[in-house]
Amino acid sequence: MDPLRAQQLAAELEVEMMADMYNRMTQACHRKCVPPHYKESELSKGECVCLDRCVAKYLEVHERMGKKLTELSLQDEELLKRMQQGSGTA
Image 1 (spheres, one colour):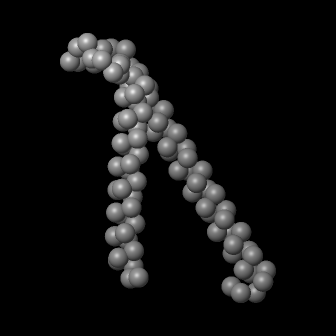
Image 2: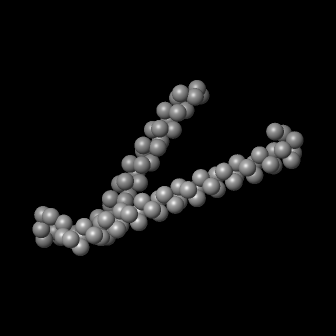
Image 3: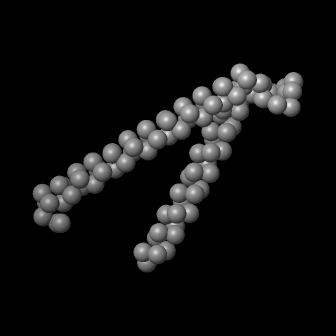
C-alpha cells in the first residue's frame, strides 16, 4: 500500500473513531443527566452542570486511556525490537 493511501485510511479511521467517541459520550451523558420526560424545553442549571462534568470526565478518561495505550504500544514495539535483535533477525 502506498504511503498516501495509508495516510488517508489512517485519517478516515481517526474521524470514525472520534465520531464514535462523541456519540458514546453524548448518549452516556444524556442518559445520566437529562430525565426521560422533559418538563421544560431548556436544560435546567442542574442538568447543565451535570452535562459539563460528565463531558469533562469522559474526555479526561479518553485522553488518559489514549496516552496509556500509546505508552503500551511503544513498550511492545521496543520489546519486539529487542527480541528480534536477540534472535539475530533484525
